[in-house]
Amino acid sequence: MTEKPLNPATLVAQGLGWVDEKTRAISPPIHVSSTYERDPDNQYRSGRNYARADNPTYDQPEAMLAALEGGAGAMLFSSGMAAATAVFQSLSPGDHVIVPQVMYWSLRNWLLTFARDWGLDVEVADMSDTAAVARAVRPGKTKLIWAETPGNPLWTITDLVAVSQIVKQAGARFAVDSTVATPVFTRPFEYGADIVMHSATKYLNGHSDVVGGALVTRVDDEQWAKLKTLRIQLGSIPGAFEAWLIQRGMRTLFVRVRAAAANAAKIAEHFHGHPALEDVFYPGLPNFPGHAVAARQMKGGFGAMLSIRVKGGAEAAIAAAAKVRVWKRATSLGGVESLVEHRASVEDATSLCPPDLLRLSVGIEDAEDLIADLEQALKR
Image 1 (cartoon, rainbow, N blue to C red):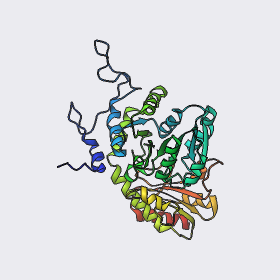
Image 2 (tube, helix red, strand yellow):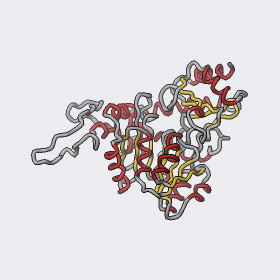
Image 3 (cartoon, one colour):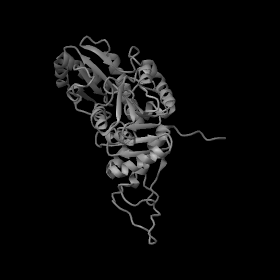
Image 4 (cartoon, rainbow, N blue to C red):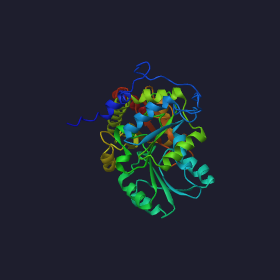
């Protein structure tokens, strides 16, 4: 009789069951050494030679993330931006890449400035429109299609199966920023992705106390080997303590994300149709564009991010944010505390973010407290 595999929530809560071999410690040690000793015969039988290439503190969180995503391997990076840009830097000047209209602004800005100056042929497409993605493909020239779903800050949804078929026909690679969905709700490899990226600063860590990023690969191939080399050569590695904090945070990933998503659903339902709001953007709302696709590829929840548009424009939105008492006015997302941000203030004139939009990162507080706080802020 075949033993039933453990649920991913069990695997991650137990850190894959790893125990320190020497001390039998349940919580892993932090390795801060920058270098490792050679054997007397000049070999490195430990497999490690220098911390920029490797650190034992990375082993557990990388194995945990690979297991969560169902991938062949994972790598931690010094930030989400470092992880994402490494994928594009692994390409060659002149390569054509397709990226979403709605995506993390810092990466979008980097792609439209530095990456283009460096030589990448970057094309922006509406990733929620499969036909638009297909039209953007240039046979023989398109090397990568990058998706982000849900897409920050409008939470647009990409049909991963449909886009993966386009990618396959083009002979390209498919990378997905799954930071907001997390492995709790979406495993992009099941829908045809080749690479999955996470800003580990967000839900993987979940405590707003570390900056980090991660890549996961579906197969261990030449492209993955190139990305490993890039991480070494660029030095875009996390510190040992940061890697330890990421594995610490990942152990509570499922309980945190499920609780926050349940809160987000309650908040979205409460404020949908609210007289002080123009709109509520949340994939879990039945009338949200892309809801049907999200329901197919987000299993068990729709994430903990939503945005609201406040009647009265940017001035009214900023005034409402100024009046919150429980929510914190801050950039970032994915922590246990709830954050509100006037997103257009962060992005530039090229942004698709409406000036009256407030981005909400919902935490694990009591949902009624969060709702009441928003209500009083909108009234005042």
